Length: 444
Image 1 (cartoon, rainbow, N blue to C red):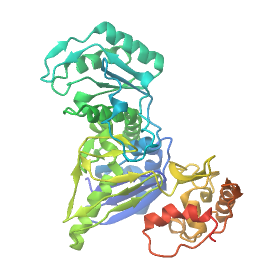
Image 2: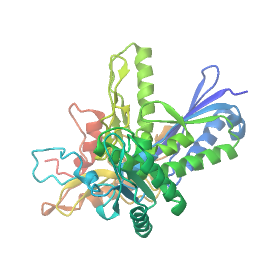
Image 3: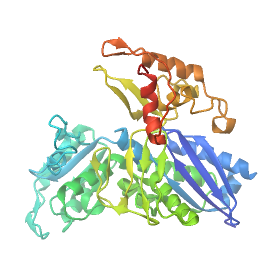
């Protein structure tokens, strides 16, 4: 008899789990995330969840009918630029659409603003001789010799994923389909993403950018979901596994792996759904859902009890034109790493210490200063009562790593390390971002 519904959210540092039985009884658990294979951390958390129910893992999973999962695999891959090595196939003469974007920049008045770095460098963007008219009719048939040369170049490039985006393929996908079939024959181990499947709609830049993002995060998402599905099955789970998508809905594993760019806001989308439910229960129509994890911070808005859907979103300077909840996500979390560059400029993130080894105060051998280390020294965290007392934080390690950061030369002088309590009105988000800065600046 299926009695449990389990929800799991994997973050950059911790994995959170909840199990609800048929009577509405709810039990929570938490375990460290495992970045090399997040499914390991999920299974560890499930063991803890089963223990709190007084059951074996096999018994609990055998009685679970639905498993709903929010993942940050795609989110972190984009924020930290750790996705697959991607090649782009496009209509001959149009390989620079990805870099030209829409001819706009974030701040049009900043003459020194560098252009965003594309996920696919120019030497891995290949033009193929083919052309469709705007109505989808064929102007130039797909040239197999040209395609063969491009595929050979992809082999030489070492790309692990290929994005295909031909002009007007949203009206007629035939050339893209033929290209996929040949790629699958000649490069069977390469992840392939075609625009007519990912985003079959007009507007060239949006289509090519979304397709490239899909190829960039797709291999990591597929690998993770396959590992998770296998581990769950081996542990006794026979129910339905669903992945939360960026628009707040759910999809089975195969669909989520195919449309990997649709999982970029998977974890935050689950939080928005929960916040909307809280708004209903509290009778409060307007809320600002705020979620700071280990790697990123996600902020959204619920107005009049409704969450906003948008197709104008993106992440890490990459355009993703799929319908999604309107969530602003930035690379700033508890694990975000602080540094001072050669010019003396202070930075926090987007690189994260993650959970392995994690911030220095975790005592796992972390050697880089993170926001959590700063928060501990500033008194925002209780070293003896972290995770309900299940983990002790190492204040000495945090102090040592901050001393090292504080001794960095900036503007021709050493920065003193004198922790200053933050006073005044500020959001939690502002406090988190300012914590490290306070630790490395002279308070006078």
